[in-house]
Length: 388
View 1 (cartoon, rainbow, N blue to C red):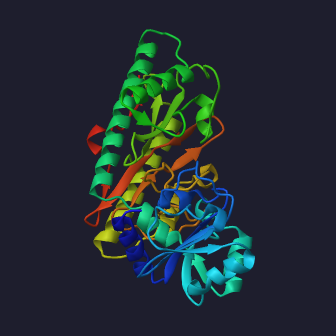
View 2 (view 1 turned 90 degrees about the horizontal axis):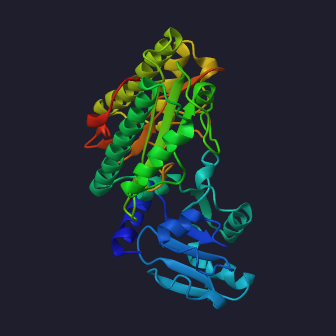
View 3 (view 1 turned 60 degrees about the vertical axis):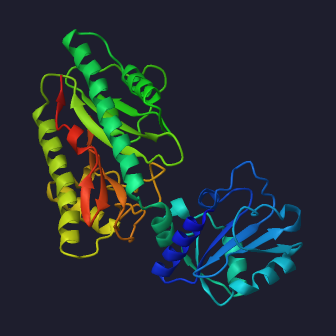
């Protein structure tokens, strides 16, 4: 951990009004602790360790004697234990203080601290609260370099959508069979050519499959049929430790025009997505705080007002950083309600979707906050309608 990272962690602790941030791990079960502290998965971790960063002053490392060097690369003073009584004694400098820890009643993505260890900490006299806000401030906020990396990834994804759709258009024009798998292969090849990395291949769904938000297939997938909705969902980042994801979803029609019910639903969906964006912009411009849950509540109200209550299957969006589903604020009020605020440097998706028995639609853009304003990434490459 660099001095700058330690300073950032302590500034986050100060801003959240806590006494410190506690990290711990056993058999690498807490992926967040390993990631933030730069502990590689190959490191032997057969005994519980603790790394406690106070709001000011030197961190404390608590390690077992047979793995005494596990945290040696990190700043701070070390306390070595041999047995459980030693471990509890080593916690003495941490008692009667309030620590951010990796758990949350509503955000399972950060809930790595097991109940037994949490109970041990509390029994020793430590007060624990969720580190959700700390995690957002340290890992879920983009600096200028991060925004640039995100913009570069977004620009590449929009270009790849255009390339993939051109292949779809060519197949339609020349009445040639094209499958979901062929389209996905084009996208994956472009990922490789541009040195983009991803945690999963793109989603390509046609016809009834577009009604499944997490549709996947093996082999060649289904062939596109005239008049079908074609849903693209792709996410990737530039390779390297500073790469930041972009994540976009776009809808097309394998035909010269769309059916009226699809046109109407798509038009409503885009209006709702833009309504969510305008809501964020207006709140921030007025100097009011806005949470991810508030954005999702607003978006759902717009969809329900248009008659789509039964067609909503997921939240409005998620945080984006070095991971596609990142550590920052999510636009979510019902699945994993997120009361964290949208902050300067927050990056997230806006991706309302509506799903029916025979087709589904999802339109996704990415937004980040810079100088108090929400900006849409890759905006110069966007397009509204894809038809053959």
